[in-house]
Image (cartoon, rainbow, N blue to C red; front, side, top):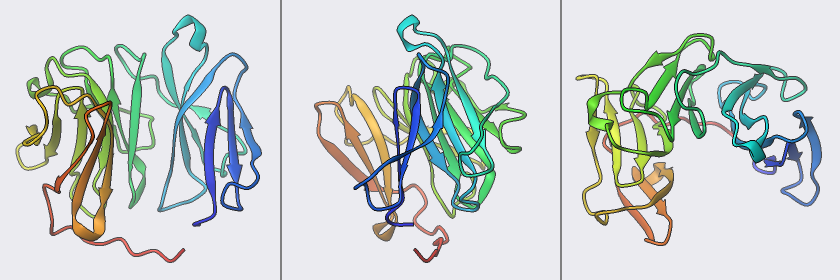
Length: 217
């Protein structure tokens, strides 16, 4: 819905249904924590995933929570292994149970995980191609066959399902990209990268023959 917005502030997840003129508390996580990211399923709007840190002043690890009732209640997903100080998530828009997680401070071999059952079980999708990289964002390309991008501090990679490995896709970026956020512009099959102090960059998606996902709003 075009006028429905979500925002996290401290431990509260807020929702607006009038384009942001007014926000109401949707869910309160434990006090002292912080909501960092929220993803809503396009397949089932009642399914929400939230990245939450229980005590951000103590730099505690972050976890992923899931709601199946539009945010009335949340349950903790299976805790990801390794360093969880930073977690980025992205959903397959055609499958509410397929969630990918990028570990910002993950050690080599523990950079990216995928779940096909809504976060009950996780599969390690890392490879040596991501060694030494710090994951800043992750984005699933809708309409593709598990084409997933990760923006790292230095570059951009995408997952090639045919060879089960990550391919560097950062041609044209500065030597140190300082990546911040990835977003797809589906109309032009374009991938856009926002950086910290380096500007905004774009290039064609790795797969430009994806199937459009048509949904009325």
